[in-house]
Length: 232
Figure 1 (cartoon, rainbow, N blue to C red):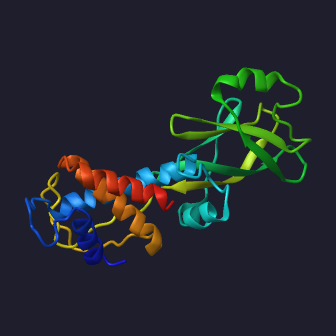
Figure 2 (figure 1 turned 60 degrees about the horizontal axis):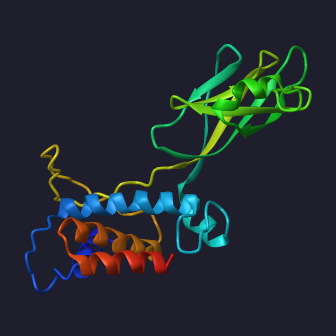
């Protein structure tokens, strides 16, 4: 959907298109509200806090809606004490999985099964014979800490390569000609929403609801919130 249409639709939902009644909403406010709506909508769908209580990959609709944000990058792992770590990317939003290949002595490299564990259970996991890192069984675990993914080796093997699959932040839209009030810089290009048009329609209702709350317009706030959730 083109940004010009998106802005018109948001103003229409706020009843500001024809009446121009107290129309003090600038384009940067629409952009800010829409980008905020994107993040809120994505987090709600991933967690399952929505009208049908469906979370990440719990239905074909969720898979279809969120697949555009799912990606894999090759990431180097730096050896630490009893683990190897890799920095999370700047656009990281939510964990999906990590794949690593391990080596030990003269043995052939082996792809490991890695599951995400809680940092608070680290000591118990390292001493549990059924759960601790094992090259023989090709199993280990990872934790998230300080914007890093830590894959534990317990000094039994080394990680030769790895990749991270994760949900990224949605691309922020930009509208040509808008002036960012924080930087006083005018946007010179259009960056359109990457989601499908049916999802953009939901995000427009979300954005209209955010703006309605800002200007204390109760009717538009209720309508936007209810419409966005009812059609999820």
